Image 1 (cartoon, rainbow, N blue to C red):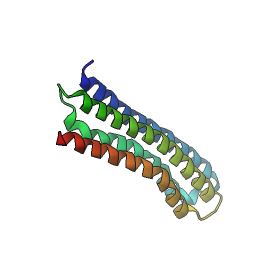
Image 2: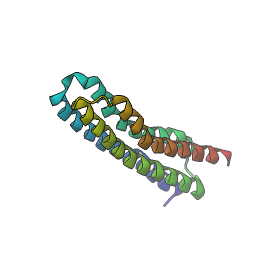
Image 3: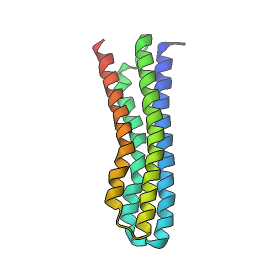
Image 4: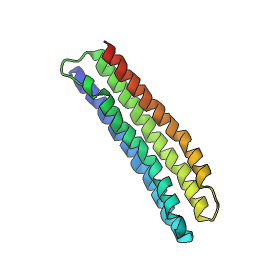
Length: 151
């Protein structure tokens, strides 16, 4: 196997896992929104914002590709390929799990809003915490890409 194959496997994991997590997360929140609209249809704007939040992790996975794409060259070293694979696996796994868990936080907020409670702002604040770890994984991917550029 050539080193670039390992690197592309990492890229595939990065984009695929983060995207799968976002798909699960927005499905969780979308289902909660449909249920909440039966009780409180006037809060659709709040439901929509909270439903969209878990979709950002998929975007981070996609952005991660652009941060390391210039290093995906034929004849690359094994160390660079391993670094890209590691970054891809890390960002993909963190994106997968944080999107699902963020979807669950947002779904609970949506249910609360649907029941008439004023919890939109507080739900947004609490939903930031799972997001933070996806942002940290994206930042690590950025720094790995920067480190590869120094060699």
